[in-house]
Image 1 (spheres, rainbow, N blue to C red):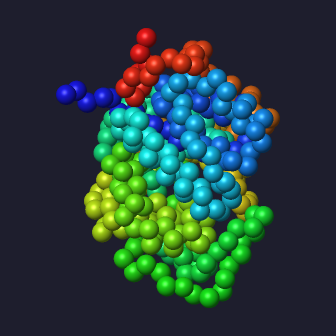
Image 2 (image 1 turned 45 degrees about the vertical axis):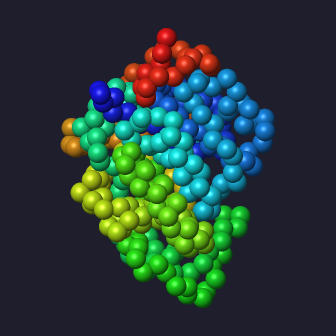
Length: 311
């Protein structure tokens, strides 16, 4: 039986800016997309985001996600389950609704083909120096709640799972299919870990990295991942909770990081973009990397194997 070419299924976690989300979906053609929209997003915005999407896009059941909430992990997990059940994708990519590719579908597939069994995720064992004075250990040691973009912490230490090697990393990642399946299996087999992480601070930065980083849960991960983030993010050294929005003023930095000869592996995605701030920059990116060259396929076109649409 022939093996299909490497290609990702793309989970897109969104809550606003339907024009950009639709542009992102178009730029990801022909990859299958599993789109989650926060249930608290107004119905008119949700409809603008999802009405008439091509058949390769599946809209996931909506839940209440949000800043620093466990439900962000739940939406990601729902995307893994759907991608594994409905596609033969070699990898699963997790994006937000403010991301955008910096490479054509052909180039992304070629990169994944060269790393067919590898995940692209930068996992940092805790304590991780970049996460402050305690290296992120307090995220695990205490119970947390998020309230209006503020952290609420119960200052009473709790018991932590002894068989987990805690780690952190970005929610943005590209997992090899077998690693996505491993994460889902752990969720199904270890409800105690799900209960623990419901009160862990910014769980989407620690749950999947910790599962992958624990040899007893995912054997062989250390040898089966590339510690390189495939996203370019425009951090400028300023202390901030979220990355800055990208504009045409950032075009040089975006293109340089994507094409510089000293970059061993390219950044094939970037963030963060919006229709209002970034449309001109996105036009530059489309032209530079050959994105959105064809009109979107019409809704209702039947989907074949990953990366293929049957006539």
